[in-house]
Length: 560
Image (cartoon, rainbow, N blue to C red; front, top):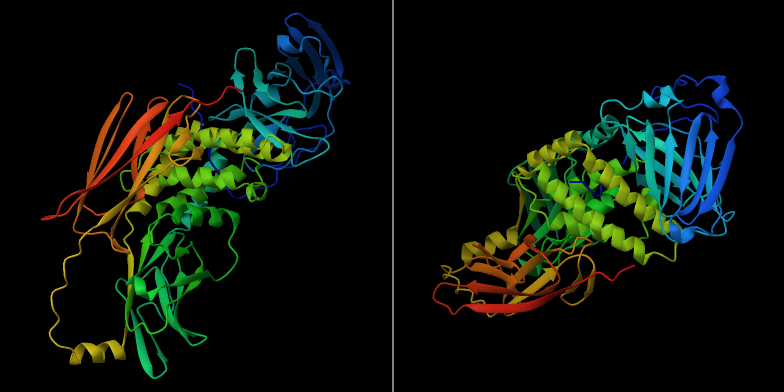
């Protein structure tokens, strides 16, 4: 089965490419083909009922392009290209750029054009196919360098040729991607995960406001430190994260409030990781890796607790984005394309990421992202630069998924991080101590009775409400979330929640010993378009069950 997917990578190294020679990964000039093969470009073109064809020889590489029958009246040409090849750290080598055009660049093909690079006369390039190196075909517009795209290619070792189907024509070249470089980049992200704070607030912190002394105590001192501070007359906690992990911030009781501000501007990959980590119910914000921030609480609060939940979605997202950038994708191009980040956040949060996380789970998640981004490409059809960036993102993730060793490493690293425990901080004051010493014997709290529940579904490619468009395969991955309430208060403990999904070819029931189903939710796969009944039942001992249900409508994708 052919794998498709999506991924991401961060550190970009410079690959110097001379105009008439290919550089190897150490920056040395690769072995040149014989001079006879370095002659000026030669080309020819023809057309028949089967479509338009063109053949050219550039720098010892024969390039053949074939259009579909629908473009048989179009004139297809191949000439020497003048576009500059953008840098990509994972690119080992590449051919020279050629310009593939239809009707002198005035027309784009109605169907993909097959382009083949014959390397029979370039043994130096053929020698690059070692240790799992993958072939891709890249494109860039000669008029707009932001229109930079990539297509997964097929390598035929017998004919020594690289073939890919291109949906648009412009500057084109074949490249070779080394998985070892990708793994090194992803590994650098995980190497920065572990850490230990040396802050003076590592175990305890104190501050006095309006004559009241507040004390913060870290339950498990180590990776994250919290310092109590006076923030313009309000009580606040400055958190410092000495690790690369992401933590979502939850405050109890709710009356303590909490406004979170990051201490500095976040990188694009950190922002995406924070977005993927922020889905936790009741989250005040996300403390990203190797950074800090300030949590300001409401006035008049004598005591409260802060819990930092480790979010593996954040570090996984950052590692994927790091991988993508090493394939030459400028993450800044995606910054304004909200759909791209939604795809990544949705897929990571629909995946159960814990100590049992496997390469298979990672592959499924990557496939979901890929399907989502393919949809976003069609939505950006009016902006060629955005469409190219999204398509390259989809191809980059697919390249990532092709490397089993890299998938194994990433999944294993996430497993290890998933074993991290929560970080708890207790904040108490002299006012709360005084009140507790003079107060009467506390009465047992009245039992909390759930009086309503809120059932939500979540997936990418939403039309409206609970209606979603099926994936290209006809299936649909969806996630269910359940919130329980007593009046306006969230209720999380003392219940059992059962979620049942029924529909065409599907009958699934999941039960959890909690009043809510938060991140990552309960996932189910609709096998085909149709209506699916999703029901959630919350049971409390001695109380009547409360049930809520919605109908999820999965509709077919419109033909293009």
